[in-house]
Every structure is written in structure tokens, then in C-alpha cells.
Amino acid sequence: MKSAAKKKSVAKKPATSSAKKPASRSKSTTKEAEAHTVEVEGVRLTHPERVLWEDQGLTKQELAEFYAGIADWLLPHLVNRPLTLIRCPSGAQKKCFVQRHSWAGMNDAIHRTMVPDTSGKLEVLTVSDIQGVVALVQSGVLELHVWGATLADLEKPDRLIFDLDPGEGVEWSQVIEGALAVRERLKAQGLESFVKTTGGKGLHIVVPLKPKASWKEALAFTRSLAEAMAKDEPDRYTTTSVKNERVGKIFIDYLRNNREASAVAPYSTRSRPGAPVATPVAWEELTSDLKPNGFTVENLAKRLASMKQDPWSEIAETDQALPEAKRTRRTPRKA
Image (cartoon, rainbow, N blue to C red; front, side):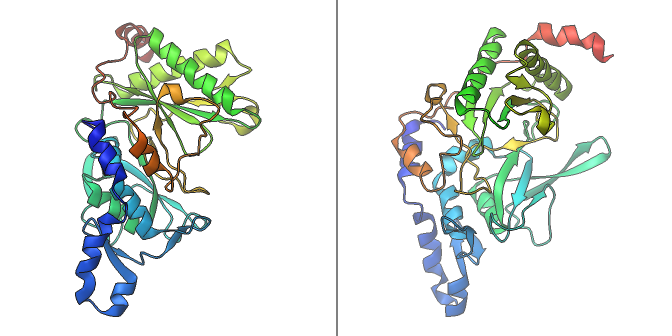
């Protein structure tokens, strides 16, 4: 993420190039093996022709090549963060399941680490490079969700998430207004924020932090802001997850700001029709022309190649922490 020019060149690179060299090395194998295996970024894919999104005819190999082509954009938001994975071995239209821990035959490019937990030790999965991502694709992973903290300090989040989830009857324009309202409330407390589409119906507002506050403090802060919005405009916002109470309202989900909670990673695909991709955008891009699931595996590379600047270029350098006054005021209530 150091230069837009570098990323631009990566995005322009044909996605298939990452598989061409390894594929040529498979000539010494039998014809049968050639028909069922291929290498992408040095990782062996079996059944590369398996279709993962039926409507697009998008295959396992094409998904691996997609990630390889956008590696410089994806990895800064993914590396060394505990993962929650959505695996769909037979494709997005078939059975999918959540995976948080290691499994039999897991590729060594996917790392397992034991970390302290309230019950003793907890195994978490991480990746450190594009090989790890391709290995996840080999195992049928269609969604990459990440914690709001890194292995360097799991007890102190470095990113907060406000997930705006529109209920039935909510217009896209209202979701945009909600995101801008969250941004303004954060600004009033001295915090800069960033936004991304989710590949679903809503938006995520992301607040980068220096890892100083605890998870308990992070949750209290995000809950306070969400509840204030719901109190001020109860006809527009709610903090309840009960579906029949969310009709016509936007659910402001602050519960992702817990230690083991996760949110879809920037540039991760979603196991939904159209092969949408959760995509960082600039605040200025939040218009009616933008669609929450408009960026896909098929068109994202073109977007990245045409961009003059990464809309999240400053997220890693943003030096900010939760307001001390808020944290101090809530301390007596926790005792």
C-alpha cells in the first residue's frame, strides 16, 4: 500500500499470469493429473475447474488467480489477523459452513497459533502471504473474515467496526445517510473513519486505532455511539438484532467489537450470487450510483487499475485512540 502506482501495476497484471508459470511446470506429470491440478503462486489446486459461482461460471482456479492479482491490496488487511472462514467446497449455491480452527489435510501455508483464552488456550488461523490465501481457496473458502486485532496484540483492537444492516423497506440512500451520520459522530470525538461496501446490502464504517484500549472499552464506546443514534432517531436506527423490530430501520451492529468477533475482510469475496467483493471506497463515492454489491470478481481488477489513489491509503498511518474522557467516565460502571 506504499504507492498507488505499484498497486495500479499489480491490478493491471493479467490474473492468469500467476498460474501460467506453475502450469508449465506440470508437463512432466501425467495427462490425467494435468487435467485435474494446477499451481497458482506455487500452491497446488486440485479440481481447478470446479465452478464456485454457477451464474458466472467462476472456477476455483479463477478465484485463486483473482486473489493473486490483487494481493497488494488484500494482504495489508488480512495478514496476521485471526480468521473466521466461510467454506463452500462445492460452490456458493451448495452447503457452506463456518470454520475457525484447523482441519485434516490443511495446507502448511495456513498457520495455526495457540493464543490465551478465558478457557485456557484457543487455536486461531492466520495467513502471512498470498500462498496462504490460495491455500484457503483450495479448501473451498469463499469468505475471509478477520478479527479487529492482530496476533501482535489480540487483547487490544486496532480496528473498530460499525456494521449498518438495513432492514426490509430501507432504501440504499438511507444507508448512505446512516454511514455519513456515523462518520460525523466519530469526527465530533476526534476520530477519522473509513468505509467499505460489504458485498451484501449494507456498509461497514471502520475506525483504525492505535492498540491501546481494551476490548471492553472498545465495545462500550461503539455501543454508546450506536445507542445514541437509535435514541435520537428511533424511526431510522435500532440496536436490536430482532428482525421483526428492524423493518424500515437500519440495524447498527456494534457487537463485532468483541475479541473473537469478526467482519468480512476488505477485498474478500462473498458466497452470494454474482460473486460480490467487499470493497473499500472513498467517502465521496457514496452516491446512488454505488451499489453495495456492485464490485465483483469480474470487475474489481478494472476498478483498481483505473484508480489514482487507494481510498484507504491512510488507514495504516492514522494515529488515533479512543477518547480518554469517555473511557474514564464509564470505568466506575464496570467496577
